[in-house]
Length: 161
Image (cartoon, helix red, strand yellow):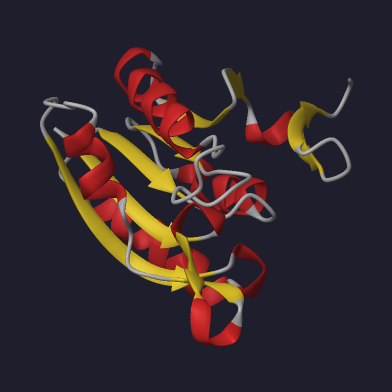
């Protein structure tokens, strides 16, 4: 069983026509998984609908508590990319679980989004990596202790890169 916790972020943004802008909506993850024939046992829990820049220490504790309390030893967390590293570091004290965070640089509802690829890649990483906390984005797995988001390049990099 893989427990999937969603927190919001760009991956869950939807175009809100009345305002001519995007806002975070209900997660589309269950539909995405069904449309892509994902049959690995999983359950999806939406913890919150926030842009990661709006996450507080209380929100990060909520994520931590949900992951720690899960009876699953494989956890996937969808998260906004701006503070994904911060949340991953908060989860580092949880032992004996493989915890993978992923997200998207473009909303899942857009044709050119990296969301479906990242979720699929993260699902595979969750099933194959040893216990620990990881970030899986755009075909790479990162150690949160050595990672940062390069906003200008729209990708994650190792601090030494």
